Image 1 (cartoon, rainbow, N blue to C red):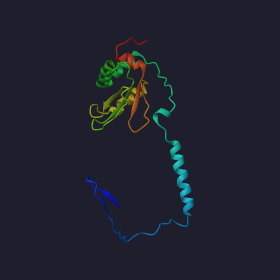
Image 2 (cartoon, helix red, strand yellow):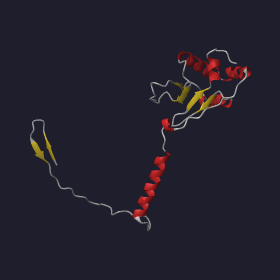
Image 3 (cartoon, rainbow, N blue to C red):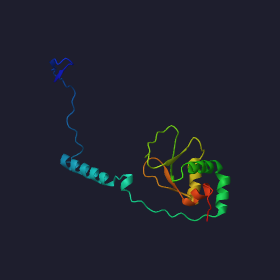
Image 4 (cartoon, rainbow, N blue to C red):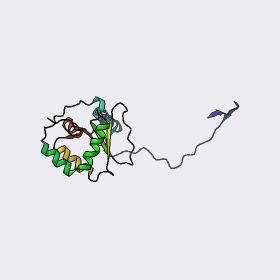
Length: 167
């Protein structure tokens, strides 16, 4: 092996390696190694074909049911703090309709061209349960495609929270 220092002097380093305790190739049962390699390649090919990125996933249309004013009154009594935070976020980010839930200790790198709202487990006790209520009424829908729970807000909920007229 050769190298040179900053002044251009050339050096050659030679050493003999002594290997002790090497293991022979391991075989499992009477399987033919070529067969094992073929199976592993087949598994790898199948897994690769199943992998898909967010951009390659076909986007589906979500149809949210129409809710009565009664539902919103019930929700204001059940989860007022969460609705108030979403309300404030929507007023500051008029076009945001997606949000994620995560811990304040996590780091999330988002697309700067796609505003994603964030709600933290530490700030809202039983956050996942509160979101389930909104899901049950069809006001949010989970659209998770990776390890971070992700939701989309219905236009009806956005309209209600931003004090626009709800039909």
